[in-house]
Image (cartoon, rainbow, N blue to C red):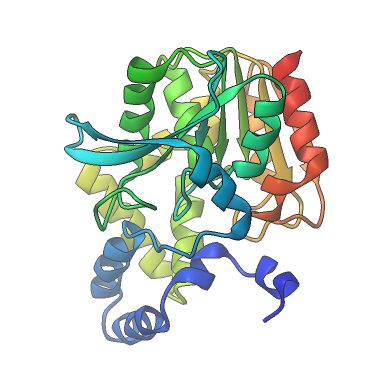
Length: 289
């Protein structure tokens, strides 16, 4: 499979083992209800990948701290890249890692900033097998207390959802940048079920299960819902060829923001966008102005 071919396949479809897909198909035929419970377990399980060459320099040069966050009873690996007191918080997406935004971090260092990032629970070098969105949120709040204040924050995919939510509820930053961020949690569960080759009925049961488990409609965590409470300048970056998160989400989130700025790209997809020179130049300029 070529690099171009991979860019056309959602991350979940690339990383989920074939054995999981096979099991899901069988359960879907037997009982959509049972399949939804199986899918729920997989939904909370990030899948790892070998660190790309482009991330290794940031990993090697970063100061690393394995810290404990008592509120979620989890340990998290934190990366400190650079020595400047002007700090930018970086938040990766699902099945990502603290070095995933390394190309952005490299350019921030050249402009006099340092970065703080982390492997979310069960991601990268952080222990555990499963995690949930609230773990991302509590990690962000904890890092602000321990290592902040931060000048700005940059989040990719689920990291963007997390930063919209935490900014709405108190994260004290001056600028926010989100990249490839989903709006609807319902759409997230639908796409997840589709990537696992499960039926739409399983997707509905999956969303209902999580709503009951966490005692609320998880659409309350959707991007545009959180964006309505974000008052700071926010740059929304999204690619029209993103197969993981449709670019219509970028419009929905931007419309909900008080000070939203939209940057649409083409032919970069969900992952390549993080290393694109034009995107990085725009992000740096947005932070500096």
